[in-house]
Image (cartoon, rainbow, N blue to C red; front, top):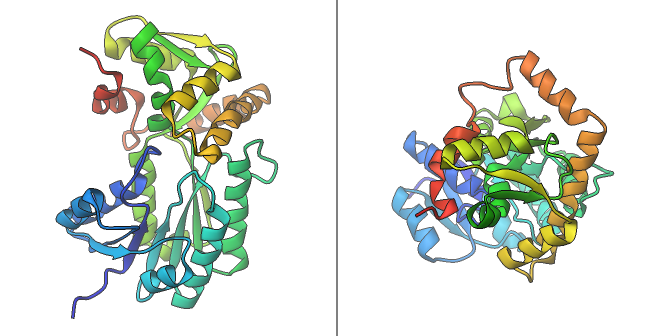
Length: 308
């Protein structure tokens, strides 16, 4: 009989949100750690994971029996649900399945915007998702990521390529954005999955660095060897670009994007983001060798800008 991998990863085929789950699979297998990936169907993406050596499990996060079967016999699970309808139902199903399977830990991929009073509906749902796992008395590590480089540069890419502009409704260029590389989230998640007793019951915000819009523009200019500037645009312009780029039928994702700027503006106007940047810097955590910085992220993702 084939022994089940003790770690189950959901969301491993990946999408446009940083593909953290897929990176965890790759990191684990590179280290010789057996790992299972829950996917909705057999396709080219699941074949790639199987070719890497992952155990493939077919199932739907919104199907109770699928999730119970997938979690049975596991020790830890990485729970990653995309920005689309169904998060709270999927959280409830996973919480019950985790309780029944007596999991040692669920690593719950949450968001930096997760809060009871978050202006983002998705942020409020992630806060409720955290409460669901807590109420079910499931050992959980809530991993809250800042704004992914992958996501914000997908928004910026068209403006950079077309007009050498970072277009966003984030007020003046000195406004800070808390950024994180998907790889840093994946690294933190894998460490938790391998050390459940160290992380159970904790919530952590992971930030690679805090940069102003002007600093992001400067780093992009240096990377592309041409001047790139920040340009403030209206929320309507911001959303029009998002509509052209994202799946227009995914209202959950578009609604989250429409409120993201409010969350960042509040953080800047209150002084919280400036304080966080200073605090992280003073503690030696702001610029560290083990976190992906913007220069290395840009180099690794140069094809995003379609430079000739």
